[in-house]
Image (cartoon, rainbow, N blue to C red; front, side):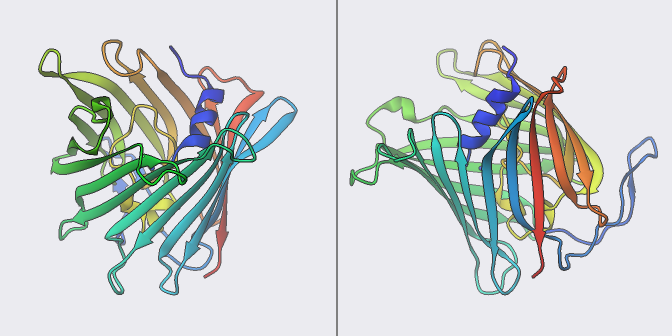
Length: 323
């Protein structure tokens, strides 16, 4: 089943999920793939992100994310509000630092959703993550506690522990995810182990990934999703911020732009679930048409499904702040 852009927009409204000075780099064919990154100065800091659904002459702002910083220009929180015809969701990320460290050691993501504007039925999804890095700044492990509940009920519906371990090879990242129940009244809440193998370019952008899930019936890993991405030659605004390495390392198979920010900006995205595992052939096939400010930072991205429907697309707008 091919995923349509309205479905992408629906997912977008429901989602939560260190750099150094570099010279121009070339791929093996000699093509320039990035220019010298701009230093982090005023107006390079994200202020707000708007997700706007366009359908013919109609448009509707489905999401707004607002970035907040401390006096060291570190991201301390992101507040989001999203809506569609069926759900209203408040989203918040909070980041914790040791003293004057430039990278968070812990983050907290909370999504509060309801099925009506009055929020008569609330659901709280909370993820607390401890982040670990090596001495070069690469992710080595994320330890995550997930819990789902309702504020009127003292005991969560369920809670689980997830450990994500990462290792690196030449042009590759390997990941392994294991899950343990903390409070699980239903054993189906504990997912089987998963592993990923990603190819990356010279800047660390994930260009392709294969995700595998352990099949408990046949006692073997089976391919679940295959993902592929291409990028522009500009540095993304996400990669300039202190929370950049707290996001996902691998695509999910239904990856939203906020879940997997990369060093560069997306141009194409193609993700397919295998028929034997996962979503039974769910297919993301999108292109990103990007516009930039004079300093090279992205200011707008129009997301179209392929083949494109010119009257139906998602517009993502970026604004920046002076600190």
